[in-house]
Length: 344
View (cartoon, rainbow, N blue to C red):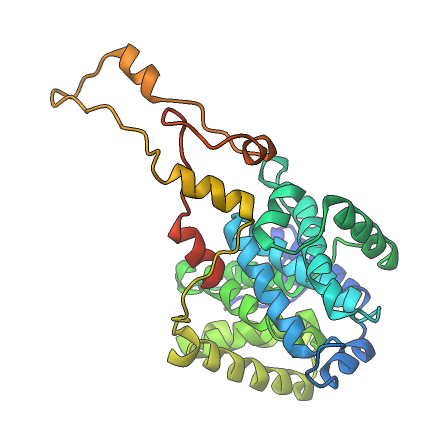
């Protein structure tokens, strides 16, 4: 096994990785939510007037559903949770404002992480999340969040450490590179993010605990030795490490249990306005007839042009008259419902 010392990595990417690790270690405390604020939320009992851990955790689950629905990457979700927790730990928030804050955290994170073409519009996020606030409400809340966080929204998170540790391991191991699944580790991190308690852990420690537990399941002595060197370089003490590793282990055990994986069998209720319901009711009987597909595998160009109508939706369609027989009809996709209700 290669040594993790910087003297053995000079001239290669290893020295850059260690430099990046040192930078992350310097920054992580700066972007952590205030522990005092998180402890106040943890100590709050369940009621309608104050923010409690259950409400916070439910909102993070909503963020995960939004990220899945819009196809956002894991980094967007993790950063959104970081922005949300930093703000909640700083301000006294009423439960009625939590939905708006959650949507704003998601939008702010998406604008930082995602490509321009993948950033969902504010209007779409409001409609999908059903947060009951307007675009102007979102704009005002985004400004408040940004100001309270001093416009330092791009944070060093546990996902940054997870990716970096994973890269360092791959640089120093002789084992097959596919043996350590980054996708699985990211899914486990998202499960931890859905619990308030893990926002109190240092990102470097949380990421190392996830890797350590995964390496133990692989029973790889070489990978374990590399992690011990990473732990030593990061100056993570044993007491802190074993405390959080135990909590992470319990969380992942519950996350993978049949009780957790079992879907909610309650009937899905889709809430729509009276005007939208009227349009849906009228359009139910206006399914356009599709042209017959020729058996020969060829079709006339003019026929294809007639069958490919322009599909668009927006505010104009909601306020207009019910669609005619020639207009395309949009129906509720149950797969979308599954994505929103049972995120992976």
